[in-house]
Amino acid sequence: MDARVRGWGLVGGAEQERVVRALSQRGPLSCRALDLLDRAGASLRSACHADTIAGRYVEAHLAALRAA
Image (cartoon, rainbow, N blue to C red; front, side, top):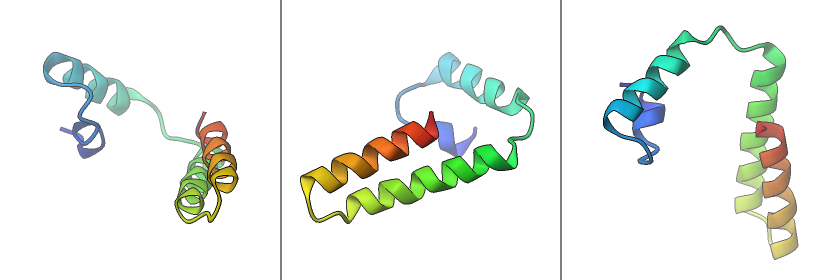
């Protein structure tokens, strides 16, 4: 099993197998997509360390937009 899927805790059994199979059948990600995912992760880390609620809100939403 793919640890990324197993760690979600949202799917199990046959559904987990279907998700793992779908992920393994995809082609390689483009450099741009990987860059956006990396920036999304950085935004989430920044949101965790933001001093204000507004700062956390902005950083978390930027991360969601980049990951979409």
